[in-house]
Image (tube, rainbow, N blue to C red; front, side):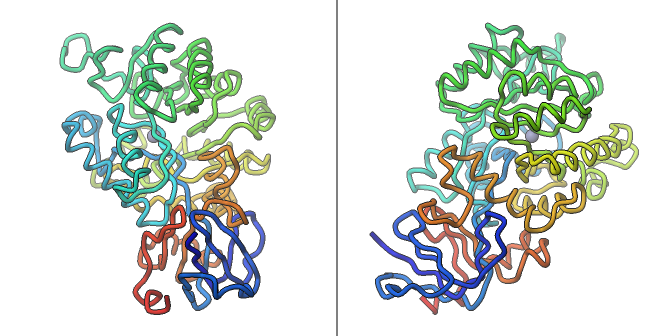
Length: 427
Ligand SMILES: [Zn+2]
């Protein structure tokens, strides 16, 4: 088995422990040793990388990835590309994420059913560069819900279970839900995505309303879990979050609105549930999207008020020990793929996380969501060897995480994806 010694690094192991100077030994695709000194048997390593004191941390997980979204501004951009071109786009985004230090992508949903499935399979086979991928399904929604682009007068847009022409499967009732989930499982999806609440992009169903029924969510969870898959929900309203917790979903996205009862329910479920607020999209809509979304439009959609709700809810959830993940809804024109690590700073600015805690959200929590085996997301002996070497200390300045020029090495599954030329000479 090939051994790589990564020495002379400041190690942030992802557990929350303070960084310490030391070395990491990788054997095959797993971490064999993490020490605060150069291991005595260092000479056994085939490859030695002397990092000159740089910062080593676990690879990050994008917790709400849309691998098939790139610079889009409207739903039409998701519908229009033919599947062949869309598959190439998805593969490019996967590589972009890995280039930027995301060794895992937990996909929320995709624009076509098998885009992430196909790219995941190619990546796993070693034929394409990309992160570990849990492939998301299409959005599953109800008639009139988020993602139902059908209109009675427009036959092109009519979307049914057997003819999904919008980036959603539209179902009504538990039996149709059962079929939609089974279909997604059959086609290879790891994660099933449900649109449970409304959304500010859909004026007739604001974020505060709940479009999917408890019975439909319960059927989705029961069916997905029986196939060994996970369920993610788009849930902004109080009722949508509560019903999702009751039904036993695995990942909750957004969750802006809450009350004491909802916070209690989430806290009681904190060991089985993950939460990704996806604040980056709203932040950029308010501050960086003027070219596409004038300020009046953003205010008309109620985004500043939703940010206020998000701050209240997720600050409270942080204090209650909820496992937050970073990432979400990158791929819009104003929220570009590759800039996903900016979420770490948003977690500090909006929710009060320390830099170290926010990095744990980006690494350990993401790893736990990706693999229930508990062997991903921290630099500990026996874990999968996904890691990132930075030129600079993100605990002092987290913005360097989103600066690709500061990434000196990306390793995934024990393989070097990138290594800066200055370190190459040291091998
Ligand atoms: Zn999303």
